Image (cartoon, rainbow, N blue to C red; front, side, top):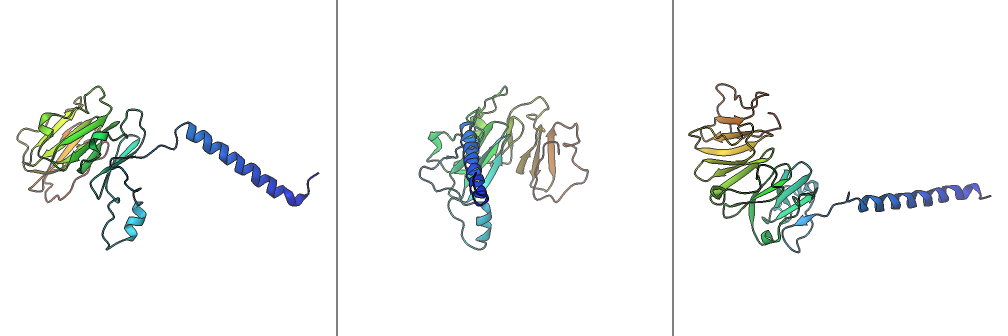
Length: 233
Protein backbone atom coordinates (compact mmCIF):
# COMPACT_ATOMS: atom_id res chain seq x y z
CA UNK A 1 0.00 0.00 0.00
CA UNK A 2 1.53 3.39 -1.03
CA UNK A 3 2.37 5.85 1.69
CA UNK A 4 0.20 8.90 2.16
CA UNK A 5 3.16 11.14 1.19
CA UNK A 6 3.09 9.75 -2.37
CA UNK A 7 -0.64 10.35 -2.93
CA UNK A 8 -0.30 14.04 -4.04
CA UNK A 9 2.47 13.07 -6.50
CA UNK A 10 0.38 10.26 -8.01
CA UNK A 11 -2.62 12.56 -8.28
CA UNK A 12 -0.52 15.27 -10.02
CA UNK A 13 0.76 12.74 -12.56
CA UNK A 14 -2.79 11.63 -13.35
CA UNK A 15 -3.93 15.24 -13.83
CA UNK A 16 -0.99 16.04 -16.12
CA UNK A 17 -1.72 13.02 -18.31
CA UNK A 18 -5.43 13.90 -18.41
CA UNK A 19 -4.70 17.47 -19.52
CA UNK A 20 -2.33 16.20 -22.21
CA UNK A 21 -5.00 13.87 -23.59
CA UNK A 22 -7.57 16.71 -23.62
CA UNK A 23 -5.19 19.01 -25.53
CA UNK A 24 -4.50 16.32 -28.13
CA UNK A 25 -8.23 15.69 -28.64
CA UNK A 26 -8.92 19.44 -29.03
CA UNK A 27 -6.16 19.77 -31.61
CA UNK A 28 -7.51 16.81 -33.57
CA UNK A 29 -10.94 18.43 -33.72
CA UNK A 30 -9.53 21.74 -34.95
CA UNK A 31 -10.14 23.86 -31.88
CA UNK A 32 -6.67 25.38 -32.16
CA UNK A 33 -6.85 27.00 -35.59
CA UNK A 34 -3.87 28.32 -37.54
CA UNK A 35 -3.44 32.02 -38.15
CA UNK A 36 -3.15 33.12 -41.78
CA UNK A 37 -0.79 35.98 -42.59
CA UNK A 38 -0.67 37.80 -45.90
CA UNK A 39 2.97 38.79 -45.45
CA UNK A 40 5.51 35.94 -45.62
CA UNK A 41 7.88 35.86 -42.67
CA UNK A 42 5.95 38.43 -40.67
CA UNK A 43 6.24 38.22 -36.92
CA UNK A 44 3.27 37.36 -34.77
CA UNK A 45 1.21 40.51 -34.06
CA UNK A 46 1.79 42.13 -30.68
CA UNK A 47 -1.35 41.77 -28.51
CA UNK A 48 -3.33 44.99 -28.25
CA UNK A 49 -2.82 45.02 -24.47
CA UNK A 50 0.93 45.34 -25.03
CA UNK A 51 0.43 47.88 -27.78
CA UNK A 52 -1.59 50.10 -25.45
CA UNK A 53 1.26 50.05 -22.94
CA UNK A 54 3.50 51.72 -25.51
CA UNK A 55 1.47 54.91 -25.34
CA UNK A 56 3.40 57.74 -26.94
CA UNK A 57 5.71 55.41 -28.82
CA UNK A 58 5.64 54.55 -32.51
CA UNK A 59 3.53 51.54 -33.42
CA UNK A 60 5.25 48.30 -34.41
CA UNK A 61 4.72 47.17 -38.04
CA UNK A 62 2.87 44.10 -36.82
CA UNK A 63 0.46 45.92 -34.50
CA UNK A 64 -3.14 45.65 -35.68
CA UNK A 65 -4.51 48.84 -37.22
CA UNK A 66 -8.08 47.58 -37.63
CA UNK A 67 -9.92 44.30 -37.19
CA UNK A 68 -13.25 43.16 -38.67
CA UNK A 69 -15.34 40.39 -37.13
CA UNK A 70 -17.35 37.88 -39.19
CA UNK A 71 -19.72 35.27 -37.84
CA UNK A 72 -16.85 33.13 -36.52
CA UNK A 73 -13.63 34.55 -37.99
CA UNK A 74 -11.48 37.68 -37.82
CA UNK A 75 -9.71 39.74 -40.48
CA UNK A 76 -7.21 42.43 -39.57
CA UNK A 77 -4.97 44.92 -41.34
CA UNK A 78 -1.62 45.59 -39.66
CA UNK A 79 0.34 48.82 -39.35
CA UNK A 80 2.53 47.64 -42.24
CA UNK A 81 -0.67 47.37 -44.33
CA UNK A 82 -0.56 43.59 -44.66
CA UNK A 83 -3.38 41.27 -43.57
CA UNK A 84 -3.86 38.68 -40.84
CA UNK A 85 -6.84 36.36 -40.37
CA UNK A 86 -7.89 33.60 -37.99
CA UNK A 87 -10.93 31.58 -36.93
CA UNK A 88 -13.42 29.41 -38.83
CA UNK A 89 -12.13 28.43 -42.26
CA UNK A 90 -14.80 26.08 -43.61
CA UNK A 91 -15.55 28.53 -46.45
CA UNK A 92 -11.87 29.56 -46.82
CA UNK A 93 -12.82 32.89 -45.30
CA UNK A 94 -9.76 33.05 -43.03
CA UNK A 95 -7.29 31.90 -45.69
CA UNK A 96 -5.82 35.01 -47.30
CA UNK A 97 -5.18 34.25 -50.99
CA UNK A 98 -1.51 34.01 -51.97
CA UNK A 99 -1.98 36.62 -54.69
CA UNK A 100 -2.42 39.28 -51.99
CA UNK A 101 0.77 38.53 -50.06
CA UNK A 102 2.63 41.47 -51.59
CA UNK A 103 -0.39 43.82 -51.63
CA UNK A 104 -0.78 46.77 -49.28
CA UNK A 105 -4.23 47.34 -47.76
CA UNK A 106 -5.97 50.27 -46.05
CA UNK A 107 -9.24 48.77 -44.80
CA UNK A 108 -11.01 45.47 -44.08
CA UNK A 109 -14.58 44.27 -43.59
CA UNK A 110 -16.30 40.94 -43.03
CA UNK A 111 -19.72 39.55 -43.78
CA UNK A 112 -21.03 36.24 -42.41
CA UNK A 113 -18.43 34.00 -44.07
CA UNK A 114 -16.93 36.44 -46.57
CA UNK A 115 -13.83 38.64 -46.27
CA UNK A 116 -13.31 42.02 -47.93
CA UNK A 117 -10.15 44.11 -48.14
CA UNK A 118 -9.50 47.53 -49.65
CA UNK A 119 -6.04 47.83 -51.16
CA UNK A 120 -3.91 50.97 -51.30
CA UNK A 121 -4.93 51.68 -54.90
CA UNK A 122 -8.62 51.90 -54.01
CA UNK A 123 -9.69 48.46 -55.21
CA UNK A 124 -11.88 46.10 -53.17
CA UNK A 125 -11.01 42.39 -53.20
CA UNK A 126 -12.94 39.51 -51.64
CA UNK A 127 -12.73 35.82 -50.82
CA UNK A 128 -14.62 33.20 -48.84
CA UNK A 129 -18.25 32.19 -49.18
CA UNK A 130 -20.02 33.39 -52.32
CA UNK A 131 -23.35 32.49 -50.75
CA UNK A 132 -26.71 32.78 -52.51
CA UNK A 133 -26.19 36.51 -53.11
CA UNK A 134 -22.79 36.46 -54.92
CA UNK A 135 -21.46 38.62 -52.12
CA UNK A 136 -17.79 37.86 -52.86
CA UNK A 137 -18.09 39.01 -56.48
CA UNK A 138 -16.91 42.62 -56.37
CA UNK A 139 -18.63 44.85 -58.97
CA UNK A 140 -16.52 46.82 -61.43
CA UNK A 141 -17.46 50.14 -59.80
CA UNK A 142 -15.89 48.95 -56.52
CA UNK A 143 -12.59 48.04 -58.12
CA UNK A 144 -11.24 51.59 -58.21
CA UNK A 145 -11.40 54.88 -56.29
CA UNK A 146 -12.84 53.30 -53.11
CA UNK A 147 -11.87 54.94 -49.81
CA UNK A 148 -13.72 52.80 -47.21
CA UNK A 149 -15.72 49.58 -46.92
CA UNK A 150 -18.28 48.10 -44.52
CA UNK A 151 -20.09 44.77 -44.57
CA UNK A 152 -23.34 43.56 -43.07
CA UNK A 153 -25.28 40.32 -43.22
CA UNK A 154 -24.26 39.01 -46.66
CA UNK A 155 -23.84 42.41 -48.33
CA UNK A 156 -21.04 44.95 -48.66
CA UNK A 157 -20.96 48.75 -48.88
CA UNK A 158 -18.15 50.75 -50.52
CA UNK A 159 -17.54 54.49 -50.29
CA UNK A 160 -16.12 56.11 -53.42
CA UNK A 161 -13.72 59.04 -53.48
CA UNK A 162 -16.41 61.20 -55.12
CA UNK A 163 -18.71 60.76 -52.10
CA UNK A 164 -21.05 58.21 -53.64
CA UNK A 165 -21.83 54.70 -52.39
CA UNK A 166 -21.92 51.23 -53.96
CA UNK A 167 -23.67 48.19 -52.46
CA UNK A 168 -23.70 44.56 -53.60
CA UNK A 169 -24.90 41.23 -52.23
CA UNK A 170 -28.14 40.55 -50.39
CA UNK A 171 -31.15 42.76 -51.14
CA UNK A 172 -34.19 41.12 -49.58
CA UNK A 173 -34.61 44.09 -47.21
CA UNK A 174 -33.57 46.82 -49.63
CA UNK A 175 -29.92 46.79 -48.56
CA UNK A 176 -28.85 47.63 -52.11
CA UNK A 177 -31.54 50.28 -52.63
CA UNK A 178 -29.34 53.33 -52.14
CA UNK A 179 -31.45 56.48 -51.65
CA UNK A 180 -31.65 58.50 -54.85
CA UNK A 181 -29.23 61.40 -55.05
CA UNK A 182 -27.05 60.24 -52.14
CA UNK A 183 -23.78 62.18 -52.45
CA UNK A 184 -21.19 63.93 -50.27
CA UNK A 185 -20.83 60.83 -48.09
CA UNK A 186 -17.81 60.79 -45.76
CA UNK A 187 -18.37 57.56 -43.80
CA UNK A 188 -20.41 54.34 -44.03
CA UNK A 189 -21.59 51.56 -41.72
CA UNK A 190 -23.54 48.34 -42.17
CA UNK A 191 -25.80 46.36 -39.87
CA UNK A 192 -27.34 42.94 -40.34
CA UNK A 193 -29.86 44.11 -42.97
CA UNK A 194 -29.42 47.89 -43.17
CA UNK A 195 -26.80 50.51 -44.04
CA UNK A 196 -25.88 54.00 -42.85
CA UNK A 197 -24.13 56.90 -44.53
CA UNK A 198 -22.70 60.03 -42.89
CA UNK A 199 -22.76 63.12 -45.07
CA UNK A 200 -20.31 66.02 -45.05
CA UNK A 201 -22.99 68.28 -43.55
CA UNK A 202 -23.20 66.08 -40.43
CA UNK A 203 -26.49 64.40 -41.31
CA UNK A 204 -27.14 60.65 -41.46
CA UNK A 205 -28.95 58.67 -44.15
CA UNK A 206 -30.17 55.10 -43.55
CA UNK A 207 -31.77 52.43 -45.73
CA UNK A 208 -32.65 48.75 -45.66
CA UNK A 209 -34.57 46.87 -42.97
CA UNK A 210 -36.69 49.13 -40.75
CA UNK A 211 -38.62 46.60 -38.64
CA UNK A 212 -36.80 47.65 -35.48
CA UNK A 213 -36.65 51.32 -36.43
CA UNK A 214 -32.99 51.02 -37.40
CA UNK A 215 -33.42 53.13 -40.53
CA UNK A 216 -35.62 55.78 -38.93
CA UNK A 217 -33.09 58.55 -38.29
CA UNK A 218 -34.20 60.95 -35.53
CA UNK A 219 -35.65 64.13 -37.00
CA UNK A 220 -33.29 67.08 -36.81
CA UNK A 221 -30.17 64.98 -36.18
CA UNK A 222 -27.17 67.06 -37.28
CA UNK A 223 -23.56 67.64 -36.30
CA UNK A 224 -22.71 63.93 -36.45
CA UNK A 225 -19.00 63.16 -36.78
CA UNK A 226 -18.99 59.33 -36.78
CA UNK A 227 -21.38 56.41 -37.25
CA UNK A 228 -21.56 52.69 -36.39
CA UNK A 229 -24.21 50.01 -36.86
CA UNK A 230 -25.28 46.98 -34.85
CA UNK A 231 -27.40 44.03 -35.90
CA UNK A 232 -30.72 45.88 -35.70
CA UNK A 233 -29.72 49.41 -34.73
